[in-house]
Image 1 (tube, one colour):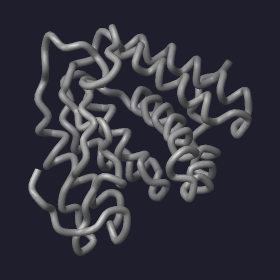
Image 2 (cartoon, one colour; image 1 turned 45 degrees about the vertical axis):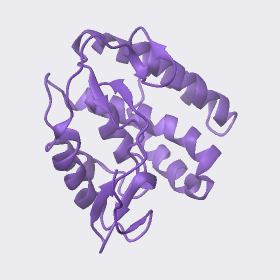
Image 3 (tube, rainbow, N blue to C red; image 1 turned 90 degrees about the vertical axis):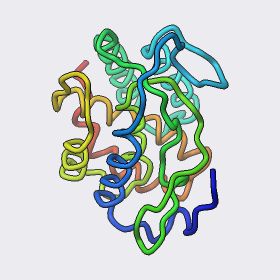
Image 4 (cartoon, rainbow, N blue to C red; image 1 turned 60 degrees about the horizontal axis):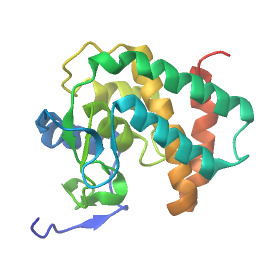
Length: 202
């Protein structure tokens, strides 16, 4: 891609502002794909999106250790099993695959470009929740629902499923944070205490 002026991480403005640009200019322009396996284009392919979620869960559990209560880990496992029930609804898209603030270029407090894709075949909701959870600020329902209302969808998407997708993404994000963004960890752990109420009952 061509050079994009600006800087990453900082002076990015509010989440709802850059999420709005991201959704309208990138996510809503994604193209469907057929005859492709789920998963990383240049990595391990999966037979289903549920398999991809399961591998993400395993990686996250390895990273966290005893950072979160064992009960939370068990509830997230239940959540992943519940997400399997949506398997028949999933549409395959060619995704950026790493659509987070660390790969966004900002200029004058405004999103100006997206760099460093890790191509992925998956549902559009993945890049949406990944972006939403890619920074610990504004991880609240108001920002989530306002931005989600802008995302075009092929199938009905109720609030319950949206919350499930977000909390699973947040869980995996904490694992990523431990490895490569430790300075954000305290913010994510604070948000987790608020979001864990949406975990399924055991």
